[in-house]
Image 1: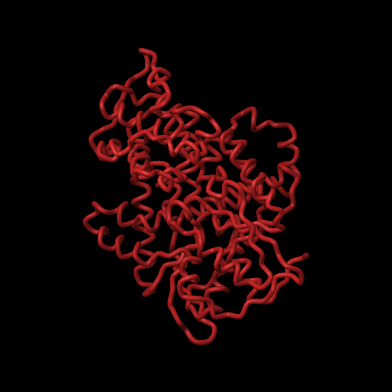
Image 2: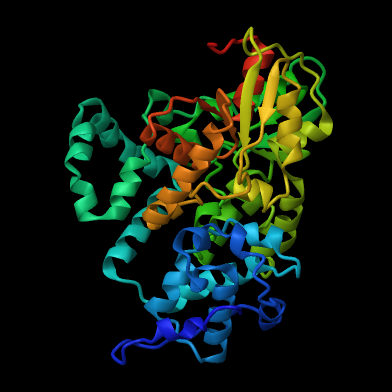
Length: 452
């Protein structure tokens, strides 16, 4: 490394219990040794760019993983703080010239942390709230009902103006700040179990509804069905499907992730589809990892591998099979648009060209590219709740870079990015609309015009 050893700042009081990784899948020493500490990851790591500490960079965290493996660095609160600061955006994986599989290392580390590190009571309670509610749409709906009244009665504006929640907990304040307007459609699942193709059927596909998206931005799922059926796809939407496990997987909740994965595989078992399509990048990346997540499950290993082999991002799928529906201009004048690359789409699934290819097929669309397009917006699942200060700075930078293009519309294909960008547009008093590419294609197919 070119900087001082990070171990100095990790000295732990003697009163703190020193723990290490257990023998159940610790970070692989071979993967750790593949890091040559060249520093290429530093400029692309969002947490390092905001915090500025070596220990909050990929190579710094790898140093810590090695130290905990070797028993020279404790798995203490000081160490875990730097693992927690990682957004899991995978930009370092794309950048690394040595091919370091940092994604595998941080995944193994986070599972170790959740098993072997005792968090403070406020941390435990917050995480328990997140993991017991967010992955379960029906539970989340129960929570949204009083929150809907909280918004409509004006209480939200009063609470925010007083800063009461911020004084209690910055994390709870961040969660409250992310709450989008709650519509009546959030409490329904109106999409039928099977929607026939328009015209000649080309494919029979399954579709994931998602857990947060179906409540916070349900129009995306409706638009996705419209686009698929208009392009010759019969769409199957299993009614019993739940969360894919992305949120829990990214935070090291191993057993809950496996349970959610098994349940989702079961829900699609009788669907008889050629592909399983996803319109949220974080979900898509995790679904494609099912073969790895359930690799040691004697009952589900083969089923998980087969399931993952059918998974496609909906933009990836449509770009591959081609659009057959006629597209109309979205407005009378040329439409300047900027596409925002979600991290788990760009770095996790290596999908970048396909969304742009689809959007450019809409007559009159002019795509512009932002500075630092590959930099995370700060959403990263629930990172903007757990690490609100770092996430806020990244959100500010992302919105500034997107709006500096002069585009009149932002296209974003991930629910977390949508919520994060919408919030920071509001904070910067900017009114640029944020729409999913499927919504734009749906409007174009149906001849719906956007206001100039």
